[in-house]
Length: 193
Ligand code: GLN
Figure 1: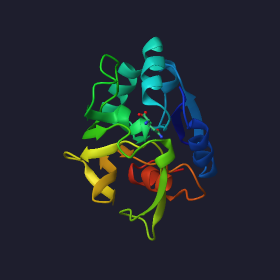
Figure 2: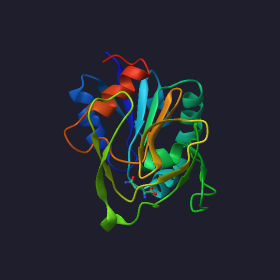
Figure 3: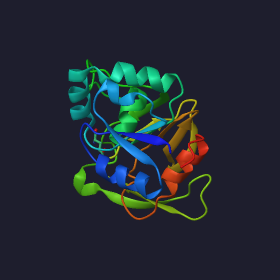
Figure 4: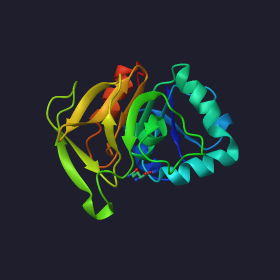
Protein backbone atom coordinates (compact mmCIF):
# COMPACT_ATOMS: atom_id res chain seq x y z
CA UNK A 1 0.00 0.00 0.00
CA UNK A 2 1.25 3.47 -0.81
CA UNK A 3 1.58 6.18 1.80
CA UNK A 4 0.56 9.70 0.91
CA UNK A 5 1.66 12.42 3.30
CA UNK A 6 -0.58 15.40 4.00
CA UNK A 7 1.11 18.54 5.29
CA UNK A 8 -0.79 19.11 8.54
CA UNK A 9 0.62 22.31 10.00
CA UNK A 10 -2.66 24.19 9.57
CA UNK A 11 -5.69 24.36 7.26
CA UNK A 12 -7.80 21.79 5.39
CA UNK A 13 -5.60 18.73 5.90
CA UNK A 14 -8.36 16.52 7.36
CA UNK A 15 -10.44 16.81 4.20
CA UNK A 16 -7.52 15.68 2.02
CA UNK A 17 -6.85 12.78 4.40
CA UNK A 18 -10.42 11.57 4.07
CA UNK A 19 -10.45 11.83 0.24
CA UNK A 20 -7.14 9.96 0.00
CA UNK A 21 -8.33 7.25 2.39
CA UNK A 22 -11.56 6.85 0.44
CA UNK A 23 -9.39 6.14 -2.62
CA UNK A 24 -7.52 3.39 -0.76
CA UNK A 25 -4.31 5.23 0.14
CA UNK A 26 -2.67 5.09 3.52
CA UNK A 27 -2.06 8.62 4.78
CA UNK A 28 0.40 10.22 7.17
CA UNK A 29 0.13 13.67 8.69
CA UNK A 30 3.36 15.55 8.09
CA UNK A 31 4.47 18.18 10.59
CA UNK A 32 8.18 17.40 11.02
CA UNK A 33 11.09 16.39 8.75
CA UNK A 34 11.14 12.80 10.04
CA UNK A 35 7.57 12.28 8.82
CA UNK A 36 8.84 12.49 5.22
CA UNK A 37 10.71 9.23 5.43
CA UNK A 38 9.35 6.58 3.05
CA UNK A 39 6.51 8.71 1.66
CA UNK A 40 5.33 7.92 -1.89
CA UNK A 41 3.66 11.30 -2.42
CA UNK A 42 2.58 14.42 -0.52
CA UNK A 43 -0.41 16.78 -0.61
CA UNK A 44 -0.14 20.38 0.62
CA UNK A 45 -3.57 21.65 1.65
CA UNK A 46 -5.27 25.01 1.58
CA UNK A 47 -5.41 27.18 4.65
CA UNK A 48 -3.28 30.19 5.45
CA UNK A 49 0.16 30.17 3.89
CA UNK A 50 1.46 32.93 6.18
CA UNK A 51 0.71 30.68 9.18
CA UNK A 52 2.16 27.59 7.50
CA UNK A 53 5.52 29.21 6.71
CA UNK A 54 5.88 30.42 10.30
CA UNK A 55 5.03 27.04 11.85
CA UNK A 56 7.27 25.16 9.39
CA UNK A 57 10.22 27.46 10.12
CA UNK A 58 10.19 26.38 13.78
CA UNK A 59 10.82 22.73 12.91
CA UNK A 60 13.05 23.09 9.81
CA UNK A 61 10.58 21.19 7.65
CA UNK A 62 10.66 23.07 4.36
CA UNK A 63 14.36 22.77 3.38
CA UNK A 64 14.09 18.97 3.66
CA UNK A 65 10.70 18.78 1.92
CA UNK A 66 11.82 21.14 -0.83
CA UNK A 67 14.76 18.84 -1.60
CA UNK A 68 12.47 15.78 -1.68
CA UNK A 69 10.18 17.57 -4.15
CA UNK A 70 13.15 18.48 -6.37
CA UNK A 71 14.27 14.84 -6.17
CA UNK A 72 10.92 13.79 -7.69
CA UNK A 73 8.44 13.26 -4.84
CA UNK A 74 4.94 13.45 -6.42
CA UNK A 75 3.47 16.61 -4.86
CA UNK A 76 0.09 18.33 -5.11
CA UNK A 77 -0.42 21.79 -3.58
CA UNK A 78 -3.89 23.28 -3.37
CA UNK A 79 -4.63 26.94 -2.64
CA UNK A 80 -2.23 27.88 0.20
CA UNK A 81 -0.26 24.76 -0.84
CA UNK A 82 0.05 26.23 -4.34
CA UNK A 83 1.49 29.41 -2.79
CA UNK A 84 4.15 27.32 -1.03
CA UNK A 85 5.15 25.73 -4.36
CA UNK A 86 5.20 28.86 -6.54
CA UNK A 87 8.70 30.00 -7.46
CA UNK A 88 7.48 33.63 -7.56
CA UNK A 89 4.86 35.66 -5.66
CA UNK A 90 3.66 39.10 -6.75
CA UNK A 91 3.83 40.54 -3.21
CA UNK A 92 6.39 40.50 -0.43
CA UNK A 93 4.18 39.35 2.45
CA UNK A 94 5.94 35.99 2.81
CA UNK A 95 9.46 37.28 2.19
CA UNK A 96 11.93 36.18 4.81
CA UNK A 97 10.16 32.87 5.39
CA UNK A 98 11.24 29.76 3.59
CA UNK A 99 8.79 28.29 1.10
CA UNK A 100 9.15 25.20 -1.06
CA UNK A 101 9.28 26.16 -4.75
CA UNK A 102 9.11 23.47 -7.40
CA UNK A 103 6.54 25.09 -9.71
CA UNK A 104 7.96 27.71 -12.06
CA UNK A 105 4.84 29.87 -11.86
CA UNK A 106 3.99 33.36 -10.56
CA UNK A 107 1.14 33.63 -8.05
CA UNK A 108 -0.82 36.56 -6.61
CA UNK A 109 -2.13 35.76 -3.12
CA UNK A 110 -5.81 36.48 -2.38
CA UNK A 111 -6.34 37.79 -5.92
CA UNK A 112 -9.72 36.07 -6.32
CA UNK A 113 -11.07 38.22 -3.47
CA UNK A 114 -11.98 37.92 0.19
CA UNK A 115 -13.70 35.09 2.05
CA UNK A 116 -17.09 36.62 1.18
CA UNK A 117 -16.22 36.51 -2.50
CA UNK A 118 -15.68 32.74 -2.42
CA UNK A 119 -17.27 30.93 -5.36
CA UNK A 120 -17.69 27.58 -7.09
CA UNK A 121 -16.92 27.34 -10.81
CA UNK A 122 -17.31 24.50 -13.31
CA UNK A 123 -13.89 23.61 -14.68
CA UNK A 124 -12.91 21.65 -17.75
CA UNK A 125 -9.92 19.59 -16.65
CA UNK A 126 -7.55 17.85 -19.08
CA UNK A 127 -7.91 14.12 -18.44
CA UNK A 128 -11.41 14.27 -16.89
CA UNK A 129 -14.74 13.71 -18.63
CA UNK A 130 -17.29 16.26 -17.48
CA UNK A 131 -16.81 19.43 -15.47
CA UNK A 132 -15.23 19.47 -12.02
CA UNK A 133 -16.78 21.99 -9.65
CA UNK A 134 -13.88 23.91 -8.13
CA UNK A 135 -14.34 25.79 -4.84
CA UNK A 136 -12.33 29.03 -4.64
CA UNK A 137 -11.78 30.50 -1.14
CA UNK A 138 -9.52 33.58 -0.81
CA UNK A 139 -7.82 31.86 -3.68
CA UNK A 140 -4.42 32.64 -5.17
CA UNK A 141 -4.30 33.54 -8.84
CA UNK A 142 -1.75 32.01 -11.19
CA UNK A 143 -0.79 35.13 -13.13
CA UNK A 144 1.95 33.42 -15.13
CA UNK A 145 2.12 29.65 -15.63
CA UNK A 146 5.72 29.88 -16.85
CA UNK A 147 6.80 26.52 -18.20
CA UNK A 148 4.08 24.56 -16.37
CA UNK A 149 1.42 22.64 -18.29
CA UNK A 150 -2.06 24.13 -17.80
CA UNK A 151 -4.66 21.45 -16.98
CA UNK A 152 -7.60 23.78 -16.27
CA UNK A 153 -8.40 27.48 -16.59
CA UNK A 154 -11.09 29.81 -15.28
CA UNK A 155 -11.94 33.18 -16.85
CA UNK A 156 -8.82 33.00 -18.98
CA UNK A 157 -6.37 32.24 -16.18
CA UNK A 158 -4.79 28.91 -15.28
CA UNK A 159 -6.18 27.30 -12.11
CA UNK A 160 -4.63 23.82 -12.29
CA UNK A 161 -1.07 23.32 -13.49
CA UNK A 162 1.53 20.62 -13.58
CA UNK A 163 5.27 20.57 -13.96
CA UNK A 164 6.54 17.00 -13.96
CA UNK A 165 5.97 15.49 -10.51
CA UNK A 166 4.55 18.74 -9.08
CA UNK A 167 0.89 19.74 -9.39
CA UNK A 168 -0.77 22.91 -8.12
CA UNK A 169 -4.33 24.21 -8.03
CA UNK A 170 -5.88 27.54 -6.97
CA UNK A 171 -9.05 25.88 -5.70
CA UNK A 172 -10.02 23.20 -3.15
CA UNK A 173 -10.46 19.79 -4.87
CA UNK A 174 -10.92 18.11 -1.46
CA UNK A 175 -14.24 19.87 -0.74
CA UNK A 176 -17.27 18.04 -2.07
CA UNK A 177 -17.93 14.48 -3.13
CA UNK A 178 -15.96 14.52 -6.40
CA UNK A 179 -12.60 12.78 -5.87
CA UNK A 180 -11.53 12.70 -9.53
CA UNK A 181 -8.75 15.29 -9.31
CA UNK A 182 -7.00 13.40 -6.52
CA UNK A 183 -7.38 10.19 -8.57
CA UNK A 184 -6.01 11.89 -11.69
CA UNK A 185 -3.03 13.28 -9.78
CA UNK A 186 -2.16 9.91 -8.23
CA UNK A 187 -2.55 8.04 -11.53
CA UNK A 188 -0.58 10.59 -13.55
CA UNK A 189 2.37 10.64 -11.18
CA UNK A 190 2.36 6.84 -11.05
CA UNK A 191 1.13 6.33 -7.46
CA UNK A 192 -1.21 3.34 -7.67
CA UNK A 193 -3.59 3.04 -4.73
N1 GLN B 1 -5.38 33.29 1.02
C1 GLN B 1 -4.75 32.15 1.61
C2 GLN B 1 -3.24 32.35 1.70
O1 GLN B 1 -2.73 33.30 1.22
C3 GLN B 1 -5.05 30.88 0.84
C4 GLN B 1 -6.53 30.56 0.96
C5 GLN B 1 -6.84 29.10 0.90
O2 GLN B 1 -5.97 28.23 1.01
N2 GLN B 1 -8.12 28.81 0.80
O3 GLN B 1 -2.57 31.53 2.23
